[in-house]
Length: 509
Image (cartoon, rainbow, N blue to C red; front, side, top):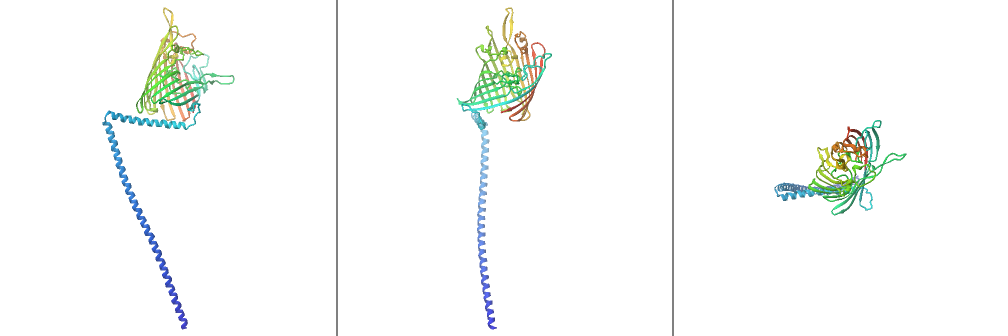
């Protein structure tokens, strides 16, 4: 028993010793882990302290930069104020230099806009030309449907009302596409600090062809065209276009082949001419202009029924017509104000020693009245200007001298003009109201009419009242209904009237 008890005591002592050793080992491990965690926490706190210090330094730098920027802004404001006061109180030379600097800046901006537009244009596909220079094709595919109430001089593009004959139709209905336009613009090389340009415009109003199984169709003709040299302030052009003294035309999609209000106050006759223009810049958006031209009065108003080309009385005088114009412009686009005054002179030779000096004075204007209103028009007074499209399309009248019985030609006096009110509802809708009249002096026309003259030769005055609405639902498509009232007075008798209703649809390319 005693041995057994000793064994038990010895086992208990061993167990106690083992437990104490295990507890000591566990305690050592816990103390080591606690020490490692303490080191990590201390390192993290140090990093946080460093970040806080860096953030404080950055914030201080930001506050310092902000203070510098505010100081610099104050200095800039002071400089602007002092510069403005110095310019106001400076000498005229300094003020002129400031104005010139501002003009130069505006010119640079305009040149940038031009360059930007040219870059956009070059991004498009071009028509290939033999010269490898830029050529642009554009045009208007135009469809016109019309209803005429009354007898007119031509059904698809009336300009005058004729007498109504009993038993005949006093109206007509039709449609066509003869006023379709095709244009080409060419950009040439740079020459003498300017650029060479060229343009030509064609339509299908040159004649009518018809077969047994075909409807009337147009024949291609040249409308206008020219070669231009354009510099910064000068322009030189040789072309075929309307008179220099009549630079404007009323707005109409129904009368494209012949400008609106022809023989009702619009001098439009296209003819060969040479023109020079010089601009006098006044400031960034204002300038004055002077134009001078030589005009070939090739159109023979007195013998317009000829089927062949012969020398006109203006060409027989062996000198061109002379035309000039002065102008003033300010503003841009729809807000542009433009005023002009012009004069014309030529001499006509009718043979047998008879020459007639013809002349005209004209004025034109474009005045913006409000944000969406514009007033445009032209006025003229002249003698012998039938070849320009005025004076009842007659240059002269013939009278007999008594008692010799000799016949003499004298220039027909005339007066006329037109005016247009334009209202832009929106960027896509426009309303135009136009009135115009041409009057040849009836007292001079009473002297006599050639026996072979057509019916229009008996007319002394022609008036047109017109209203149209132009709608562009897309930039390339347009739709335009139009109404025209024609009133024509013959030398004897009462006025003849006709109403013209037109619906036009066009696609621009």
